[in-house]
Image 1 (cartoon, rainbow, N blue to C red):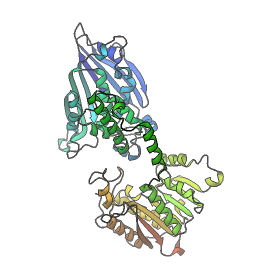
Image 2 (image 1 turned 135 degrees about the vertical axis):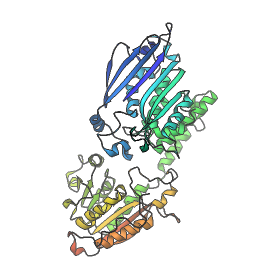
Image 3 (image 1 turned 60 degrees about the horizontal axis):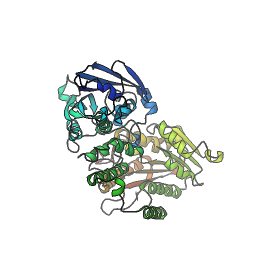
Image 4 (image 1 turned 180 degrees about the horizontal axis):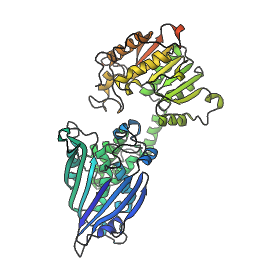
Length: 520
C-alpha cells in the first residue's frame, strides 16, 4: 500500500520544509510498527525546488485476520472470498487511514514546534494514491468509482485526476475494477487539512473498514472533519460510508454536523445554538423515557415466538442450529423447562462471543451442564444433532446459497429428524415498509435470498411433504394488512414420532426452490 506527498518550493521557502511538517527527516528511512504490519517513510526526492515523501504500508495479512474484525456483523466483501487472500495489503483503505494517524499524528494536528507558523501556511501539494478501492458505488445511486472520487475531493479545492483501473489490461472487454488511481493537486493547501481529509475520505470511498465501527467513530469523524465536513455538499454520503452505514451512528453524526454548521453560520459556539432545552428539563425527559416501557424489538418478538412454539410442542432438549452469538440460547436457559440446549454454528468467532456473553466461565456448574456449544456446518449430517426434542433455525436459511439449501434440509429433516423444527426467516414482502432499506436490497449483506409469504409457504410445504412432517406458518412482529409481518415462522411437526432418530429419504428431490423463489 503506497502513497506519496509532494510539494515545490524556492530557496527562501524550500520544499524540504515538508520534512519539518511531517516530523520526518528527508535523509532517513524510518520504520513504524502498526497493529497490522509496518509503515515505512522515505523521500524519493528532497531538494529546495521539489520534495516528495512516501508512505509504504506493509500489511501482514495474518495479523489482519488475528487482530482485525472485518466489517463487523455485516461482513466485508473483501473477506467474503477468503481471510488471507484479499486486497487489504495493496489498496488504500481504512488501513492506510489508520497508518496516517499513527505515523503523521503531529502533522495532522497542525503542530510544528521546530518552525512555528509553518504548519499554518498553505503550500503547493500533490498527493498520489496508485490504488484506491471504491466499494458499494453504482452508476444509479452513488455514481461510478471515478465520479465518487471527484464528488468527494473537488468541493475541498482539490484538482482531481482519477482513472479507473481495468480488471485486466490484457482483456479490456472485462471492464473496469472498483479501484481508481487518484492524484490530488492544490496550489495552496495546508498539509494538516490534507491529512485529515484523507483520514476521513479514504474509508468513505472504500465503504468498508477493517475493524468494527463503534460509537466512538462518530467522535473521530467529527474531530477529523472539523472545519470542512459540515459544509461539504456530500457530507451525508461521507458520513454514511465512513460509519459503514450504521444508521444510528450516522443519524447522530449528521445531527452534530448540522449543529456545527448552524453555529459556524451564526459565528457562535455549538453549545450556544443547542440551548432550546435546559439541562434540568432534558434530564427529566430522559428519566421519563427510561421509566416508560420500551416496545419489544423484532428480535425479541422473534425469540418470544420461538419459545412459545417450543413450549407448545413440549420440547425439553433443544438444538439451536446456527446459534450465532447465543441470544436465543440465553433466553432458553432462563426457562428451567428447557433442560438441555445445544448451540451449533460454523463460526468459531460467533461461538466464542456466545460463550463470553452467556458467561459460561462464571456460570454455576449445574447450569453449565444444560448447555453445549459446538462448531458444525448445517449442510452436512451430524450425529450430534440427533436425539433432541426440537431444532431451531432462527434466521439461518437465508444465509445459504439456494443450491445448498437441499443439503441443509436433508441434514436437519432427514438425518437429525427431531419431532419438531422451528424455522424463521424474513418476509421479503415487508421490506417496502423499512424506510432505511433501499428498494431491491436485502436486509443483511450476507443474505443470499429473501422470500415473500407465498414463496416461504411453498418451500415449507414441500419440505414437510418430502420428510413426513406437517407445517404451520405463523407471522411474527407487527402485522400489515397489505404485506404481512416482517418475520415468518414455520413450525414443523413430525407426522409419526415412532420413527424418531431414523434417517428419512425425501420423497422427491427435483425441486430446490419454491416456484418464483430465485434470489432477488
